[in-house]
Image (cartoon, rainbow, N blue to C red; front, top):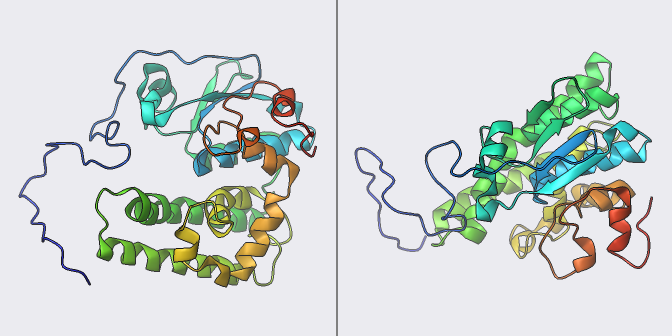
Length: 290
């Protein structure tokens, strides 16, 4: 291991200065709003406030899949929350999600609008509201929820752990990268073994477990995280690659991955806000599937 200056933690930690990494301008050790800003409200039953990160994509995939199955009540407005600008700390967003993390959903179809936050909670809420992508039998439901919560518990090691230290940290720390790379490869092996004898995460039926896991781990094996895939030798996990490619081919997934996306070289794959199904058609000369 390369030599690095030892850090001796103080007796009591204090927030003395920004850490210099990505999001240094918005990271802080306290909660609550930093400014007044009301959230816009569109005409559809569901109002989504989000960004096209892996966590945001979980929900837009779910909404597009519901629409694909004919659930008109799943029509939604997707409003852009730019987290690097601190939009998540506006008073309106904090009122919907006190944790100030995207995505947040408001169901306006009820007598009293209902706020839903945390992606696992949003996926379960939508699955139960529309009766899709979550089995009703106790064994099938439990299996899906097992893997949904596996993703919720595992991915912080991916995003906040490996990706942070590998891509975003102002200083490359060998110990931290090695520690999280080892955990990432273990998690990929968990998925690869799981998918060895089944089409989807919870068996033969596509579910909210797949929608939750795909944007993170599917994106990794499909090369969406710069050089991270090469670094982790993701080609070794053939079952995960097969599963990811199959899900990526779904029309609703293709649409969901575009929503609230504002980066990348291909402008036709970016839809910063979505307020009508026809919004997708303005982004490409050829109609997207579905």
